[in-house]
Length: 368
Ligand code: GLA
Image (cartoon, helix red, strand yellow):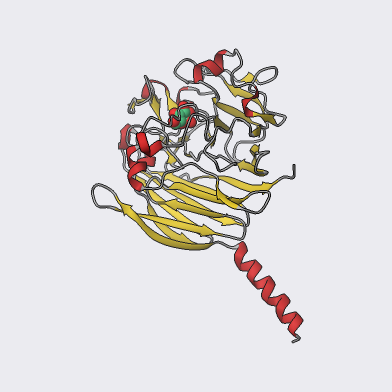
C-alpha cells in the first residue's frame, strides 16, 4: 500500500470515529443524602454535550459559531449546589412525569380521580414538587452516548402506575439526539420533555435578537394560569405567527392579551404533520454568532418559552447572569393539560405499551 493510500485510510478512519460519540464519565458531587451525581461528556466531531444524572440534565452543549469557535449554548450553573438551590427554572432537565401544566392538579382516568401536587399558582407544573428534574437517574454508557434510567413508583407525586423511563442522549456529528422510552404497569399519563434554555450567542444576554421559525399554523391560547382554553387558534395575524423566521423581540411587547398573561412567549404550538412522525419543530438563527439550531421531533407540540421568569437577582449569586429572556426553551411535548382535554392527542399510557419519542437538536452555522 502506498503512503498516500495509508493516509487516506487513516483520515477516513478518524473521521468515522469522530462522527461517533466519545463518552467519558466523571464524578460531579453528592446529593444531601450522599447519593453520587455523575457527569457524562459526549463528544463527536461537531458537538460536545455534558449530561448529569441529577434530573438527567443537559449541563452544557458546545458548538461552533461562524468563525469555528466552540462555546456553550445552554444556560446552567457551575456547581451542583446551585442546581439544588434552584427549584423553578428546570435548567436542562428532563421534566416529568407530566411536563407542563395540569389544571388544579386534577384529572381522571378510567373513572378514578387523581390529585397531583399544586406547585404553580393553582396548577401542577412539571410533574409536581419532586418531579423527575429533581431526582438522581441511573446513568449507563451506551454507543455514542448515555442512557439515563428512572423508575417512578406507583403513587409517586400522586400519579398511578410504576413508570420505567429510559432517556438516551446520543451525539452524531453536530446533533444531540434524545430518545425517550417509557412503560407502565397501570394506566397513567405521561408527558416528557427536555427543558434546556438555549442562548446561541453563548453570552447570557437576552435572546430577543435571535430569529425563530415555528412551522405551526395554530397554537393553544391559555387562561390566566397558563392552562390551555382548549381552543386551537390560528397564528395568522398574531404575534404567534413564526411561520416565517422572525426576530423574537419584534412583537414580544405587542399589546396582546396572550403575551401579557405569560409576560412574553410561554405557549404551545401545534406542529404540522402527524403525531409520532419526525417533523421540524423549530429553527433558531442567531445573526451575531451565525449559529443555527434546528429542532426535530415526533411530538405533536412545542412549548416556546422566552425565559420570562428568569431573574438574575432571584437566587443571588446562583442565578447571576441569567437575566430575563437570557435563554429560550423549545420543549417538544404533548399539549399542556391534555388529561383534561379529550380532543388533544392523548397522553395516556397503558400497561403493555411502550411509548417511544425522539427529539433532535442539530447545530449549524449560516453566513451573514
Ligand atoms: C415552562 C413553563 C413556564 C415556566 C418554565 C420554568 O416552560 O411553561 O411557565 O414555568 O417552564 O420556569
